Amino acid sequence: MQEAGPGPGAAAGMSGGSGPHPRRVLVTGGSGLVGRALQQLVSEGKELPGEKWIFLSSADADLTNVAETRAVFKRCQPTHVIHLAAKVGGLFHNMAHNLDFWRQNMQINDNVLQTAHEHGVAKVVSCLSTCIFPDKTTYPIDETMIHNGPPHSSNFGYSYAKRMIDVQNRGYHEQYGRMFTAVIPTNVFGTHDNFNIELGHVLPGLIHKAYLAQKNNTPLVVWGSGKPRRQFIYSLDLARLIIWVLREYQEIEPIILSVGEEEEVSIKEAAESIVSAMGFKGEVIFDTSKSDGQFKKTASNSKLRKYLPNFQFTPFSQAIKETCEWFVANYHAARK
Ligand code: NAP
Ligand code: GDP
Image 1: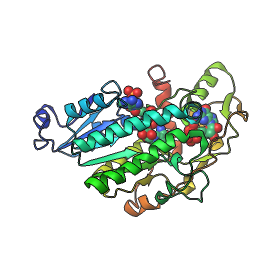
Image 2: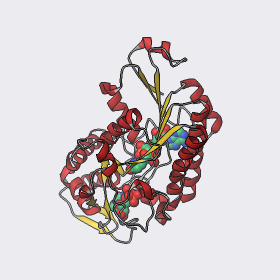
Image 3: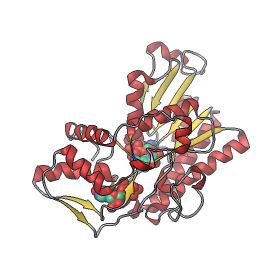
């Protein structure tokens, strides 16, 4: 369990919530890609005075287990929760394990939300994803369209489980007046991602493959046609926005956290960005025997822009460069 706050005197605020830490922010999934970006911002001093942040990993509690979930809430006494913990994976991991993604995420989400309710937590911000939207839809997708039709078949387990968070949030609000809300990020990437080639998402997978191709003097193999399109958000930008949602956003309805539609890139363009950042000089080939998955899930960030018209996203090429440099420098310790 990682804690961050203004020093040892902070412990006086641990139990009552009225001491020097009236706000105790518990981050589930605090050891993952998004959780580590939040940790970085908090350690750089982005927390407000009077906030104490606690970052959980699965070693602190298996959140599929209700007793362990209750025990960790009892220990931490959160007033606010950022709920990131989830079974997460790229297209190919989802395709092979839809049932596991459904069951584990349903268990984690029900345990976390119900335990937060039992503890009278003032606000919960959970994490959905743009891949949960209907596959057959008009574009751009917006926040009103989550339940309008079946998600893409490749990750139906993960998608339906995530959609249920929105259903539960509305239920806790209607029945108990709770402020449980959710954010909907597009594809996230950054340092501390899961760079496992079989299990992870496209960017960490391609960064790892480019690293090995460079080392072994072999081609870089991009799976699928390279034609599908994605909006990518850098984990540090997402973390900044999640902190804003925690502090300022007052709606139960979720909010899409995304770069603009014009920033959407093809998988081929994303691969080219990685090739350039890694200085890879070899051949790039496309293995079209592998699935393309959902062609696109172009999301509108109009709602976000109404709230934060001036928010600056890190340019994609800069964020890719920082992520590649981190991976190379941390190759032995990185999750892979
Ligand atoms: P990640 O890097 O895979 O991290 C997952 C986190 O959840 C880890 O801290 C992990 O703990 C924890 N966790 C998993 N199973 C758990 C369990 N049974 N009990 C307790 N903790 C458990 O995921 P991420 O990419 O940061 O994703 C964070 C959130 O963003 C998720 O809700 C995800 O659905 C959402 N999201 C991600 C993306 C994306 O592209 N990555 C896109 C949209 C939305 P350990 O480290 O101990 O395993
Ligand atoms: P998605 O956005 O939920 O579909 O998940 P991913 O992040 O796994 O992206 C999948 C897209 O990237 C598909 O079009 C894949 O064909 C393509 N892709 C290309 N190379 C890779 C790779 O090495 N790993 C993964 N996961 N996807 C890849």
